[in-house]
Amino acid sequence: MSVSFDGVGLVHPNGYRALRAVSLGVRAGERVAVIGPSGAGKTSLLRLAAGSLQPSEGRVTVLEANPWQLGAMALRRLRARIGLVHQHPPIPPRLRVVTAVLAGRLGQWGTARALASLVYPADIAGATEALARLDLADRVFDRCDRLSGGQLQRVGIARVLYQAPALMLADEPVSALDPTLADAAVGQLIAQSERSGAALVASLHAVDLALKWFPRIVGMRNGELAFDAPAAEVSPAMLHALYAAEGAVLPTQVNDPRVVEALPQRPGCR
Amino acid sequence: MSTITAVRDPQARRRLTALMLGLALLWPMLVLSEFKPWLLFDARNLEVFGNYLAGFVPPATSGEFLGELARATLQTLAMATAGIALSLLIAAPLAFLSTQALSVSRIGPGPGRRRGQVLRTLARGVLTVLRALPEVVWALVFVRALSLGPAAGVLALAITYGGMLGKVYADILESADRRPARALLEGGSGRLAALFYGLLPNAAQELVSYTVYRWECALRASVVMGFVGAGGLGQLMDQSTKMLNGGEACTILLTFLLLVLLADALSSALRRLLA
Image (cartoon, rainbow over all chains, first blue to last red; front, side, top):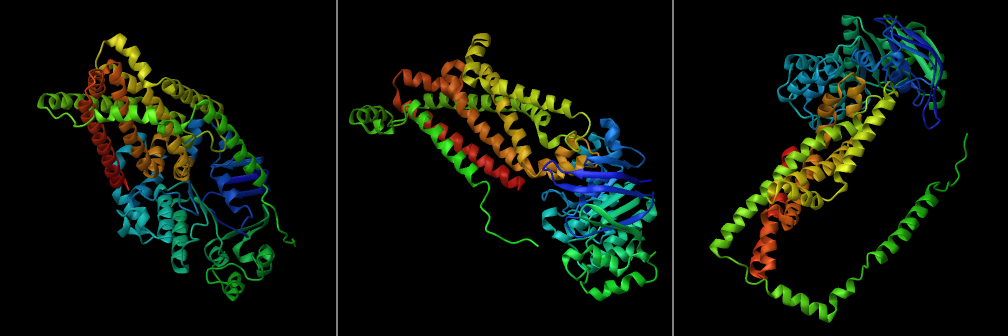
C-alpha cells in the first residue's frame, strides 16, 4: 500500500471538521482521481497523505510508515519520497524557473549541494528535461514572475516530475490551465506514474479529465467518501448526486454537460 | 436554505475598545515625558538658541582641520562597518534559530515540537539580552577595559546591534510569504536550504534595506560613542564644542549629513539590484 487511511477524521484547530471516518487504500502504482464539490475535503485528504497534517482520529499510513510515529530524521526521509503538486505553486516570484524545478530534489540533496546549486545550477539538463515534458523548456532561465499563472502551475508540476517521488500527490494541479494544456499536463503525471511505478492521487475539479485519465475515482462530499469506484462504473447519477449542491451542471473542462453524460461509456476508461 | 439578514461586524466592539485603550495609555505618557513643545518658542529660549546657532557660521575650512576631519570620518566609517559586520555574525545564526518560519516540528505538528519551542525562546532571549543595554553603555565599559579608541566602539556596536538585527531578521522572515519554505520543508528539505530557496528570494530586499539602515544608525551611534572616548567624528565634535568652536562643529555636522545621504543612496542601489 502506498497510502492507507483507516477511519481518518480531521478537525482543524478552529473547530472546523474537514474529514470524517475516511477509509481508503491506494496500492503502489495505482492512479486515483479525487473529485467532489469545493469544501469537500479533497485538499485535507492530500495534505494528510503528504505527511504535512496530523489526523485527529484514525490512522494514516504512507509508504508503509506511520509518519507520526517516526523520529524527526526518518520523517524527513519519508517526506523526501512524497511529491505534492500544490494548486497555487508555492514558488517565490524572484526565483528562476531552473531553481524552482531543482528545488524538487532538496529533500534528496545535502545542504552543501543545495547551496552550491544556487551559485551554479546543479542539474540544468534534468530541469530542462522535466520542463520539456510540459512544453516549457524555453523558459528555463526566466524568472518565475515573468510567467503566467498557467505557466507557473506547470513549473510546479515540473518540480514534482523532477523530484521523481515514490508517491505523487496533486491538488487541483491543472486548475489554471486551458483544456488542451490541462489534458497534456495530467497525461504527463500519468506517464511519470507508469514509468516510475509511483502511485498517483490527484484531486481534480474537471470530471471529464478525471474519467478520461484515471482508472479509479473517489468521490468526496462534506468530508466523507461518497463513492470509491472504477471509472467505468461511475454513472451520471452518481456524479449528479455528488455535485447536487452546485446545481445541475457538472464541472468539466468544456463545461458541456453532454460530454460527461457520454464519458462513462467511453471505451478505455478502466 | 438560509435567509440573509444584515449581520453586525462581530469584531467591531473589540476594535473600538482597543483603540480607546491605546489613546488612554498614550495621554499619561505625554504628561510623564513633560511634552511641552510650546516652550521652544518662548522668547528667552529663542534668544539662547539663536546665539548658539549664530556661532556655527561660517563653517571651518582650514586645511589642517579638514585633514583631521577626514581621518575622523574614516575612523567613524570603519567603526560602523566593522561593528555591523561583527553583529551580523551574531544576528544571522540567532535569527535562523529563532524564526518560526523555518520550524519543521510545527508541521503536523510533528516530533520535537517542545524542543523547538524551547530553542526558539532561548535564542529570542539571548537576542533580548544583547540589545537590552544601549551601545553607549557597552562603549563606556569597553573603553575602561581596552583604553580609548575605536576598538571599544566596534565591540559595543557588535553586541547591541547583533541583538537588534537578529530580532528584526527573525521578524522579517516570519512576515514574508512562508508558504514556499513550508512546502519545501514538507518535501523533506533541510532548514538552511528552505531558507535560501523559499524565504530569502522574498525577504532579501527587506533584509538588506534594514541592514543598510542599521549601518546608518551605527554611523550615528559611533559618533555618540566618540563622546565617551571611542574615537572618530564624535571625539572630534566633543573637542570642538568644548573649545566653543562653532565653525568646526558646523563642518562636522555637514559631514554627518553627507554620510547619511551616502547610506541612503547605497540602500536604494542595493534594493534596485535585488528587485
